[in-house]
Amino acid sequence: MNLSPLDPMHRSLGARMAPFAGWEMPIQYEGIVAEHRAVRESVGIFDISHMGQLEVSGPNAESWLNHILTNDLTRLGDGEGQYTLMLNGEGGVIDDLIVYRMLADRYFLVVNAARIAEDWAWLGQHRSDGVELYDHSPHFGGIAVQGPRAAELWNQIEPDSPLPKRNGITVRADEVDLCRTGYTGEDGFELFAKSSEIGDWWTRLVDAGAKPCGLGARDTLRLEMGFPLNGSDLDAEHTPLEAGLGWAAKLDKPGGFIGAKVLKHQRENGIPTRLSALKMMGKAPPIRHGYAVLTSEADDQPGEVLTSLTSGSLSPTLGLGIGLAYLPRDEATVGRELRIQVRDRNFPAEITKRPFISS
Amino acid sequence: MNVPEHLYFLESHEWVDARDPEAAAVGISDHAQAELTDVVYLELPEVGRTVAKGDPIAVIESVKAANDIYAPASGEIVEVNEPLAEAPEPVNEDPYGAGWMFKLRLSDATETEALLNAAAYREHIG
Image (tube, rainbow over all chains, first blue to last red; front, side, top):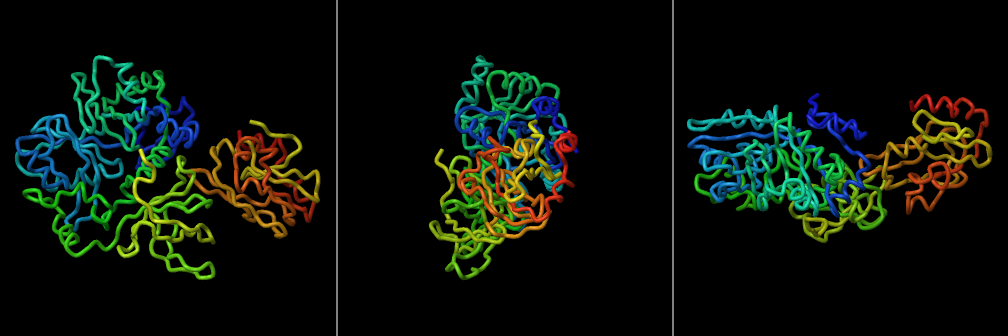
């Protein structure tokens, strides 16, 4: 089990720790609801040291990477980033990530913890001349500061170091990578630094007023925005088009990308399934990953099982259960009523738009 | 952690107040509510149901997980704390008072004596 460089901070704060993607990580400190609210209303801080940081450089880095990733890398200027995906040859998702252009021949990739090894192997397998790969993950730590007060907090502790603009990156002289990105739907930034230095950043930001938040709140925050979680909502069996991420897959970019053929076929012939946002229609138990989604029938009818939830939780903001599920295309229309089975009972839910909350 | 002397406990953190064997209240301990944090949903048993000691008879849910509540003794459910189904906050705020979940008519009053007393439960939760 990997330990975050922030592990001593978590323990001194009394965090509840649990394994996640091979790492011992904080799930919560005070409680998921309080931490969730802090991020929506003020500012919270998360340990994201488990995430992977890869660097791709060299004279051919841009053209090579643009063939590996779905979004169009050539749209980025220096210091800009974009959400993108890495697909297998069948169009299934290996990983979703943020790629930042530090320089025309130097790119920084922040990838999911559970996929670092797979990403690394995939990049290595396709590597070509004029491309260098470097994995910073083992000696980098990371924190995410999120919430409407995040920028104010940063300017307070580092008045001479402006945050990059939205989705951008600033590489500081002290080897701190400062990114204006996050996974909560709120403004904020992510900071990556050497493991030996990340603890000081954590302490300074907590002392300045950022509330420590665990992976529990990170999950409810991202789900309220309808952001998919790799390994749950994204997998090798579904394409980005099915996941509703077509905007990040530029099918017509010059040179194409690995997996594009399958996506083009889907675009022409229709997608088999669509990742749909489901919201409970009133008082019901929280819904969770794996619960069955059924057609809506009269109360005395059992209904037909269509699929199961890939994500589910109680939305602290709405006070209602929310979830995601891949539904057959013909069932996946906004407003349609379905049922979700919780233990031995079925509760009404409706397909709604993403995000679940307006930000 | 608050562990009242007059209660008996299961290792799974349910308490029972057996002073009135006709209506013995059951809930979860202060320790358990602190571990769960944010109780957001409670599924209570039906009045009239007969239960055996150890049966899973209610479900308590936090944002993160669903947990079974076990019958600390055998008997019949004679009353449930209905308001908790609408608003479960008292489980966190007052676990030994307003947070009681249901009352049992005990079929064997000696059964509860085999449970953990306050001292043993305190030791159990360390």
